[in-house]
View 1 (cartoon, one colour):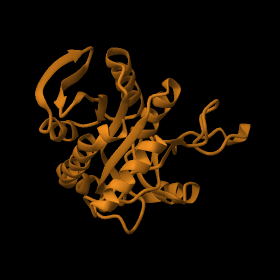
View 2 (view 1 turned 135 degrees about the vertical axis):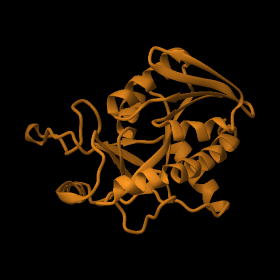
View 3 (view 1 turned 90 degrees about the horizontal axis):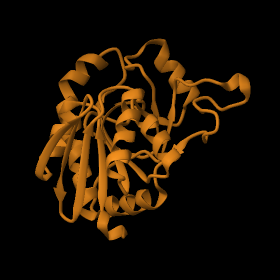
Length: 233
């Protein structure tokens, strides 16, 4: 199977590289791609950089160069759920933008015209790994992740997000853009995130302190995905 993996930051990507065999790096435009093997799978890893546009470009690079069978977004997120702590794993079922607002034209908050109200990860993959994680007593939380081009650190915006997206459990800056591209090109998508901060007034300090923990945790879960993904075939 050809698996495309997207991580936004160097810390996230480096953790993933450690599980790849015969990792070879090459530069494409301003992006670094790492290709290698894991078990029977061909892995194509890219560091997207931060934000929605960078994530969209990276997704298109993977699709154009390698035509992956599945794309996985792995990395960190800020918590919007009081029960989620640093290092906890989030496996979102739905994803949407929090900074898209065309409600005056009849669209739902977060909805891009000609696209669904929320993007969803591949149902078969999600159900398979949800069952697998439960069987192996691996703890995770599922729900809605929201994305936008702002690092959330408390204030009025966090109150607005919780009001507009009451079911959201985490927030970050790339997943919805990746999901939109995958939706457009009919590429199955799966997302695994680990909590790096609590999206509060201490978020910046906690993010810098905990990004290595979140990167390690998401990479560990990602490894279990790749170890078992061929069972889907």
